[in-house]
Image 1 (cartoon, helix red, strand yellow):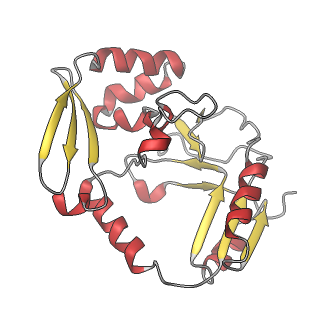
Image 2 (spheres, rainbow, N blue to C red):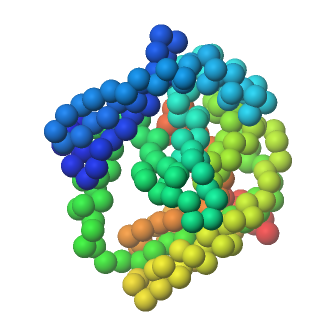
Image 3 (cartoon, helix red, strand yellow):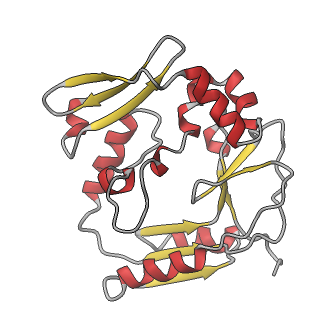
Length: 225
């Protein structure tokens, strides 16, 4: 585990009905910090209140996924010029394990010198809700900005997608070729993925906790416009 912390201390938030702790994994030591004010029951109640009870229903059956529903990435003060927030101090990750995080780090180091193109696929609007089997897919979906959406609900427009696309293209301008796909179909994205080194998606996504391979992105259906 400590090898995976070579690039910086890994902080794991562990919430149980007995106690809650932050586990700090560094290259030299593993320490814990007690979080006496973070109680499992209160966290569950907060999630229920914020997300209309749907997360609470899911959490009753899937306790191990409770923390993955908590928006740690939004913690802190986000007033102008403030750095008292997670985004200024850490890289938020919902990786299922430190081993998986280590694998992702290894892959990132292995590709650091690879030159190629960037694919950016955007869905500012989603004309129709996707056809999802409620028996196989959890009751919530999540877009790439972390917004929770429930099965059967209309999918709100993603108003920040246009700005997100512009900023990504400005950052990468002159560094690599960019292919931008607006309202792409699955076939278009799959074909473009074969020739790119980096892919950036700004759209809704569905998460299947019981069968992660069935998770996916919500793109344009063929023939829709």
